Length: 64
Image (cartoon, rainbow, N blue to C red):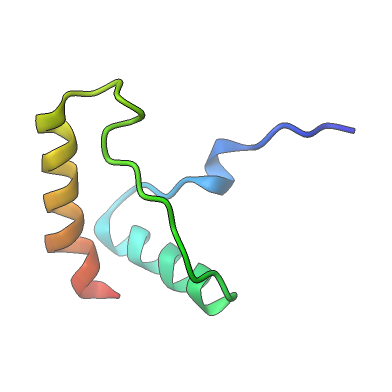
């Protein structure tokens, strides 16, 4: 049995519209909690993570 996880099935990335569409789809399917990682588990800088968070807040959240 293959227990590997396809990253494309458990991550959300792309345009703000694509991200919002995927989040809405998961919410409609009953998902009520999300883990959001903006700094790639510490592989990127804090500034990078903050910029990603700001983009999410300004461009994705309003579409939800």
